[in-house]
Amino acid sequence: MVDSAIIWKFAKPILIFIVALTIYLIIKNLLQKYLIHRVKTKKMRHNITVFTNLLTYVFITIAAMFIMFSFTGNIFSIGLTAGLLTAALGWALQRPITGIAGWIMVLVAKPFEIGDRIIIGGVHGDVVNITLTHIYLKEFGGTIGGEETSGRIIMVPNSLLFEQNVINYTFQDEFILDEVALTITYESNVEKAREVCIKAAKKILEKIKEKEYEKYTKPYVRMNFQPSGVDIRLRYYTPASDRLEIHSKITEEILKSIHQEKSLEIAYPHQELILRKKK
Image (cartoon, rainbow, N blue to C red; front, side, top):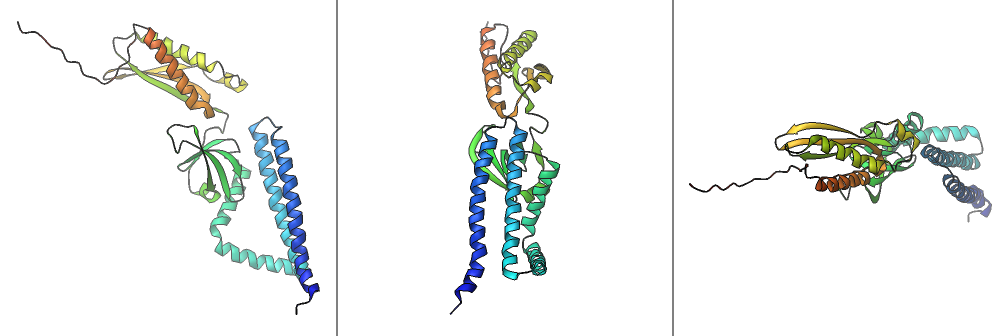
């Protein structure tokens, strides 16, 4: 029969680890929620989440070394065991290790942070968490057209960062260039069309109060010829997360104004049949 003292020798460090890990996770989650609710910037939220995740990995590593020391009783055995385990895992888990390298790259190079809107390969989303193995994205698009959030969370392996292009909408700040395009007939008043578009954009965009937005160019118009009329392209800077909503509101405002102007007519593909009476 197995001696109870031997069983307790092996069970004790594991029980201590489980209790310590439970207490640590409870404290970490409470502290993380407390801090995140009180920060004001995206960068601070990113730093808090990444730092608490890093503390978790350090805690688990130290705890694992404690358990091995409890079993072996000396540091040399820990080093030998860790070396052999690392070699075995390195061969069997090449992909996850590449993912860890990707996680380190995100921490050091910071190609994106929590809260950024990014595209990795063909996956679109807002970064909500960065862990040792995966990036969690709140998807936009996907189930619908455009860039509104779909409600789905996509887990992207960190290893893909070394294989796919990463597009960051908000690397510099929260604003990107967008446009509303329409085509008016050659008989329309082009200057009036320009005025209508600029006025509509200013009306909608004046609600943006961020100080960083002041450095951007005001709404402007670009034009080019088309077979059926003149293309009017209204361009403006907008918060990346609100792009579709602002685009829709500006389009609606322009359409209302055009319907009230007799000198403006939207061009669209159509045919006219002209009947002539015989003499």
